Length: 336
Ligand code: F6P
Image 1 (cartoon, protein in one colour):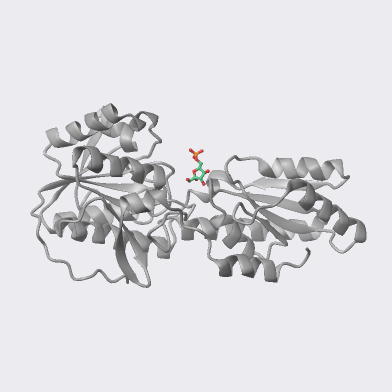
Image 2 (image 1 turned 180 degrees about the vertical axis):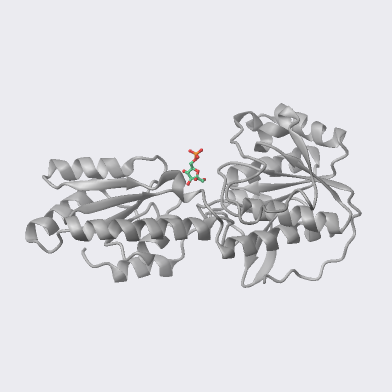
């Protein structure tokens, strides 16, 4: 299990809140459960905020305790529900949110989500001095300050399982299958899925590619009979539907292909054991760090330990794919 450094308790907290924000990810419930159970262990009351920052504005507060987080660890999604809250971009909205928390005697907030969610948390602390701790929750696995985010492992299992099934069809029907993975600005899910399923081609934003070039190369392959079928895994990279663009280009060259957009299937479902363990460790650690007086940090993991990173650093960087991953893709690819 991840090691938490020795921390000296300096804060006597009585009441904290937790919310999940942005795209839900499997394991968020396990994190909520660990936060509540650990807080209750130290006699700290926990309020859950529903629908992320929107609930903070609408006063959608619910009491959480050790009993009502039973049977949660194995459930996908987030019991607190999640939302993307555009109004939170405004300073006056954030001020209202902080006032709502203070009026209830809430002394700190734990935010579980991706970079947009962590940006909101950082601003609440920077502008109004409200103590916050962030936890990385996104299937995109693109958060700086942690080796892995809550939800990535489950999403990877789901995507690999889906591509293995598509592979059966590709082999049988001699088609190119284009499979699109989620990842707004990151190819992490796509590249790991592609490697694990021996995809013949992996297209990710981290290794820039040209539509014309790729389609022409596929055309040459098909013409030479070197490849009659294959899996092309592509990261959505910004907008869903890039796979249809590839399909259309191929069609212009006389090549039929089939598209599967894995979509939200990747986000839902029972969290994997690794995600449950990661989320439990991070949820637990977040309370220990709060009691030790930490604020304005995200808790992540690195080499078997929990670590903290300043939220300003977290949101100004992006977790990039390491060189070895990109080399692996280049050195294992069968075609071009
Ligand atoms: O950030 C997580 C994520 O699942 C991305 O991979 C994807 O681009 C986006 O959320 C989809 O968001 P929504 O569910 O709001 O369409």
